[in-house]
Amino acid sequence: MKWTDHSDKTLLQRSFLFGITGIVLCTLSLLNTYFQVVAAPMGPLNGVGFALQLVGLSLAVLVIRKRKLAPEIKEKAKKMILVLGVGLLFFILTL
Image (cartoon, rainbow, N blue to C red; front, side):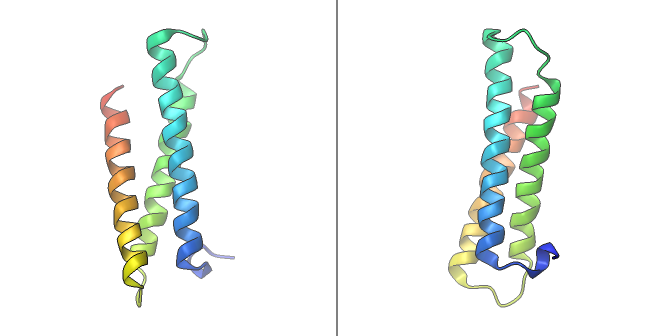
């Protein structure tokens, strides 16, 4: 089943889950870099966090590009794009 076949609410829910998981992984990587809780390389964890945020961002963009979209779904997608974009920019600049 293709991603475009899913409903708008399902895509936004998956976008949120991918995005929040990516933000949590990047936050864990950032905290471990400063506090040295675990002596392990944080590059792969940071990369997975970036990838998950990008997937969440692309799903939100996919929702907003659909035609005949309800106004509340469109507003949620816009907020999701804003939050994930700012989060991604923040974690990129903290490298």
